[in-house]
Amino acid sequence: EVQLVESGGGLIQPGGSLRLSCAASGFTVSSNYMSWVRQAPGKGLEWVSVIYSGGSTYYADSVKGRFTISRDNSKNTLYLQMNSLRAEDTAVYYCASPRSYDSSGPFDYWGQGTLVTVSS
Amino acid sequence: SYVLTQPPSVSVAPGKTARITCGGNNIGSKSVHWYQQKPGQAPVLVIYYDSDRPSGIPERFSGSNSGNTATLTISRVEAGDEADYYCQVWDSSSDYWVFGGGTKLTVL
Image 1 (spheres, helix red, strand yellow):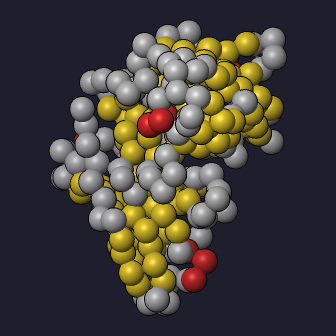
Image 2: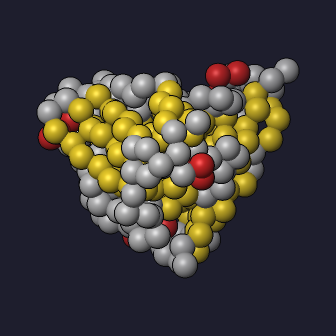
């Protein structure tokens, strides 16, 4: 059974840094692409970043240059390093993964989310 | 960047049919996926590749996609279907995943 468990969220001051983790079980994080998706309070879903099995990474314009996605194959864990945080980064952050290798496919699996609050 | 447009809200009486649209430029040429999200919960995939249903999703959920509009149809709506629904595509030109703004389905 596939499980994704996020951690690392919390309250952080503007300009600060935070690293989110997504521990995976039931599959290997390096075997397929994985993404982070966020949801600001009362708002819709927003794709944040992806890392492909080959290591290529892409970011939404809103976080480019500030966030870094990575993975640790030995820990089977996905990460999101968030720097220069802004109030508008406040959101629940989900890690999401597909079942297929097709980029146009759906996100079949989602974690429960971790809340990041950026406030002074 | 590619934009998906959904109505903010749809209301339907129990037992009736709800249709939630997702508009996008030539969206019929893309694969559309739909997610259901209830308060405080993670999204759940309910329709993928326009019209396929994951195991465990009732047959009452169906999807279609043509031209500039994709549609999620929920037949014989139940109170438990009340949730936010999001459409999603992959924009190959930018390597971005795009979500619609979401539609709140209210069961009257």
